Length: 452
Ligand code: SF4
Ligand code: FES
Image (cartoon, rainbow, N blue to C red; front, side):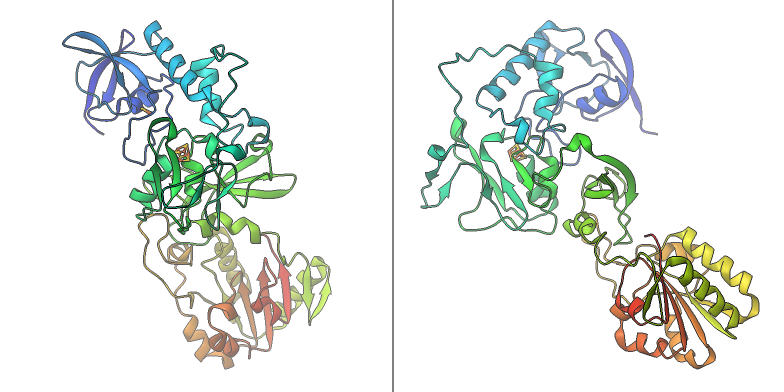
């Protein structure tokens, strides 16, 4: 437990950890909803948007301060929007400035429904616009806002293609710099920058260089507005129609926390789920885009001796083959859950002496990237270890002649190592339980579709 200190918030004593950002203390300990645009818990503090203003007592009485930059100290006295009219007014002013030229394209903006500008207008703004109708907004997205920079590069305007994955709608940007900090501090590849000054500041890549990085889709999450959007999700769904379920990355052993978001029986996006101990707020593009392959080429029914059959017939054929076999090799999988592998162990017990279990993978293990991937593509290797299943696939290759039947659970052995898998394919009866029509399912004598 961290050392707790007492601070006073709106006349209330609250116990908070020492030396944490005041915004975190207000949100998580004092339970005072405190808005932020530029602050992000997993990025450095920039302090440029000013929406988190509070009053903090100092030698000359209470003065305005930004809660994202201040750290908690014993005896600190804070006034928030709960008790201070000055704070309510200051935040309304910040919102008014931010919105004065912000486009009203919420109806066509992908961020609508999860846009902090919308949320904070309702929470902290609700001001009447003082912009005279005849003044009109400066829509920086208009064709007339395109300009040529000092290096002769076309800038500004709407729907700017930043690279293979990201589109920028310049006029929605509130210059919070979160995307720039993400690329500098997390991706460690400074590909975004703020150019220009004051009212003319704009977000950009470097001249002639695209935004391209294996984690660049995270800039669409940190962007508090709809300025940066991912091409894969642009105009696909309104976010309030999506339902979500918590999960972890099935493609890597770090187990990056994520949510799977779906609607109408289809997965539309995978989003990072914050876990400070594992992947913070980040998710690799490759993990995020896994959903695009979920529905493709599924093995939904079964195949026996190359012929498509209903699932029940495939299961019956597998049951009969297991009953008739003299020696069975069961191949467990680090791509399957602990429960699936425990079920395979239970099957081994039910089959008795004639069954033996093997585990492991031939996939190469890479290096951790320090962000959200461990480099081990076998996501549940630890689960197999916990179940006491050895990494001994090579032993099975050497002993294939001892078995007349093999059952492979959710594991594309051919894709991992075709030469070694060819030795296992010499076992006469090959039952494969697979979610997709992969190369190993194609070589099975009995392939049964499963969920994954
Ligand atoms: S593009 Fe988004 S994240 Fe980047 S500075 Fe603008 S508002 Fe902030
Ligand atoms: S959140 Fe504090 S200044 Fe932006």
